[in-house]
Length: 128
Image (cartoon, rainbow, N blue to C red):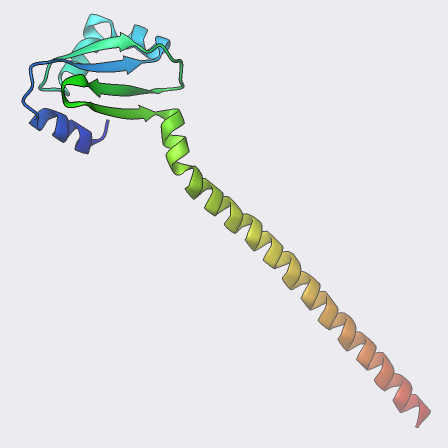
């Protein structure tokens, strides 16, 4: 969990519990007493752990109903937020590859033109 969300949550003085929603695998892990205590150390507000009705890969959902506040820190959500960055970086790679191909083709074209010019010069010199 990021420090920012932790700071916001801990600065809120509420008595109504927050809810941490985990996928089934993480729920089994964090619902055990010793692991529940690890999370309890992060919060200064009451909270409960529940199993999410949706399955997702890693991360968690945090809900504080009394404040109408929720935070989605699931892998799916992180990927969705970062997808434009992925797309930009991928397009740069593809663009760089295309530029390299065009550059190689241009160099090949120039080399071929030089060769043809030299051949023509050679024929002209032989005909003199």
